[in-house]
Length: 133
Image 1 (cartoon, helix red, strand yellow):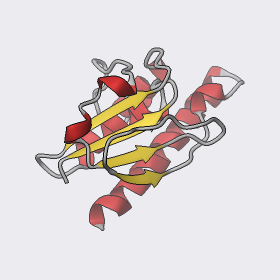
Image 2: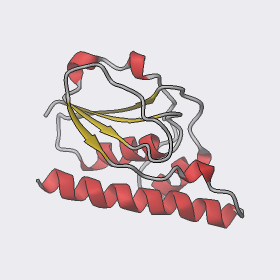
Image 3: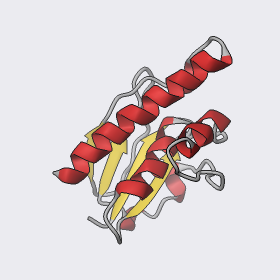
Image 4: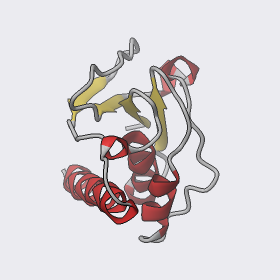
């Protein structure tokens, strides 16, 4: 395995969380990226919930899928659930981990943060299992 791309629409929450967790859990030498088809900005809640588990995402930024070096990606993990996932045209193994977008949660600040934590925890669980395989 040489490179993993986490992909969703805005590259603001799920894929950013996955990028941070991926960098923390992936074997040495595996490059980790995240991107979206309509990148916006990294949600501060994503940075906060990663910091809670010791992952610094303060320098993360949203990227467009076309800016990712396709020749360095051998696995693409899409994270979209309720929206249409972007396409990655490179040659790569594809996995789909459909997760609700925590940025879409409406409620109090604590309720929104809990949604980001739930997403973080689910991605950590899936990454842990996948890395063991």
